[in-house]
Amino acid sequence: HPNPSTPSREGNKPLHHRFSTVSHNAEDMHIGKQVRRNGPWRKYHAQGKVQRRTNHVKDVKARVSTDQTRAEPYQSGNGHPKPAPLPAQVDPTILSPVQVYESAVRTGQSKGLQIPAKTLLLSFLAGSFIGLGALLSTFVACGTTGMSAADPGLSGLLKGLFGLPTGLALVVLTGGELFTGNVFFLTAGVLDGSATMAQLKTNWLLSYLGNLVGTAFVACMTWAAGTIGSVVATQGACSMATSKVASAFLPMFLKGILGNWLVCLALWLASSAKSLPGKVLGIFLPISMFVTLGFEHSIANMFFFWQGWFAGADVSVIDVVVRNLLPVTLGNIVGGAVLVGLAYQCAYGSNK
Image (cartoon, rainbow, N blue to C red):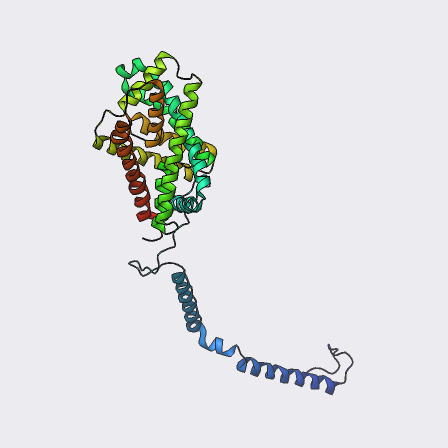
């Protein structure tokens, strides 16, 4: 019991008041214990570690089920889910093969919807550019006549490094309508359902005729300007036109397949690049290979025949059509439509 004469924290309160306060404090403490015993956290203490462990297991299972819905369900040997693969690194300078094919399909669709007058104009310009490239190739060939006999591989490489790669680069970068390239683009559009067969036939016909006129125009202009007026250049132009009709139908057909296969792959590489140097390099590599190996391209051959006729080559129109343009054109169609258009439709197309 507290001593009444001893000062306390209650100050000068009477003794009975102080005892009353103590009794009230004790009662409050008793009530507090009852509250704690019957409070909302009593259940947690009653469950103890078992309940906490149960809650932890439930949380882990919930996280695992959430992860499985985000990734493919896969159970390894120990029952754990397979970790999600890391995101693929995307090169900002080039398109993926799937994106290139989708771009080719869109190009085929736009070419199919193009008005005929525009197709004719752009195909005329494309034929002119190929003619200029073939003219440069003729000059390189005339300057290496001695090398052709001693080292035909090196001579062919020099012709492949200059000429036709430059002509195709001009076609691609100016948006020209080249028949051999349109074989691939329109085939991709038709197989994917974004272009029709009628559009394909119209585009192929107009671009072929426009390319023919364009190559004739360049051959006429260069002959009138005296570009191949020298004896060596004239003999070289006649020899090149004569050699183009010296082979049988089947070899020319197969060379046409191989030739446009590489031409369409050059267009593929150019479409995949986003920069000007990348597009030029993508064109340069396959075209230099195609020229060096002696494959055939129907539009370039048109220029060589026009040039040979202006130079006085003794080659008939029937020989040109039957022994060169017909088999090479058919081979170009097979190479571009089947080996590139159909092949990549099976690989990347939306209608697989």
